[in-house]
Image 1 (cartoon, rainbow, N blue to C red):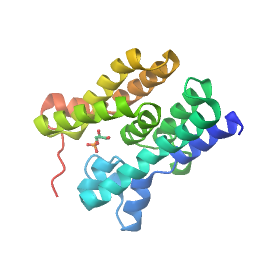
Image 2 (cartoon, rainbow, N blue to C red):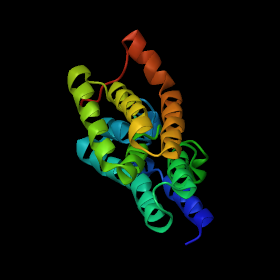
Image 3 (cartoon, rainbow, N blue to C red):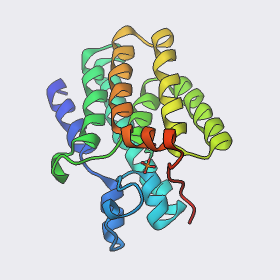
Length: 193
Ligand code: G3P
């Protein structure tokens, strides 16, 4: 297995926007609905929770599967795993198959984390569920879980994977800048359907 090839594969797989593909198959342009994002949350707004779960799992797989391959062939604490995780995630944000206009990357980042540390992933999911139950906003839950995962990864993961988490975390916050603005203004969208 060639390391560079695996990184390219991770990027290409990340570049498949399942939200857009599934919505299009139902005749819906996701970018014209709700937040305009191509992720599972906006699929929930457009098509309901069943399709949202499907898209979430597919987007998660884009991060999880390449990391599993990288762990198997190159080991967890390797630069290959660092770049495979990063590029699977960046594929979703800047997808070559969709004019480089991608999503916010939360589900794919979660897949990467699940592949690296199921323990940390489950803890982060619990934080996500708690914040979502208390506040009712997916974006706030995602940002809280993301912060939690980055901080804990400093203590629980090899340093280069902490670095990867930190870079991913910065991109996630940047991609949620409109959500953050809406949260502060009290105008953030829910997803009742
Ligand atoms: O993962 C994206 C989520 O945190 C927010 O989605 O559609 O409300 O911007 P959305």
